[in-house]
Length: 117
Image 1 (cartoon, one colour):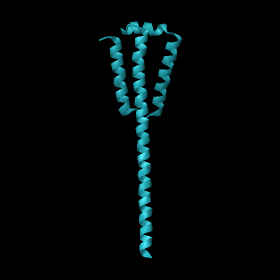
Image 2 (spheres, rainbow, N blue to C red):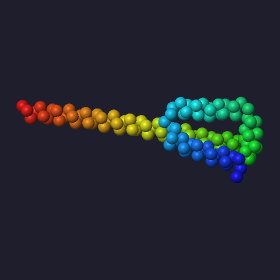
Image 3 (tube, helix red, strand yellow):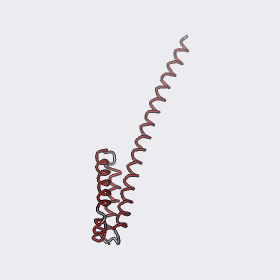
Image 4 (cartoon, helix red, strand yellow):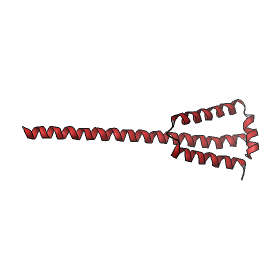
């Protein structure tokens, strides 16, 4: 097994675990996004780093390494967005449920008032 394979498998495992355990922490999300951004900026400013790191990890070229890292980064961002969408869906469902139950109580009050007259 090449070094890059081990790193990518570990990164994907960490993403999988973080989705189920730590994804609801906005501070960790922001730190990881900043780290991804800083890595991208450093690889753009010093492109030789990608080739050197790729050689150490057993990847043919620096561009291939960037592609692998991009896949892991995009997977993280997709999971982050999915988590936020699910949270918004749950909040919307709770709001609609409360509104509907409140409306039912108002309806029963009006109905009881009409029967008394």
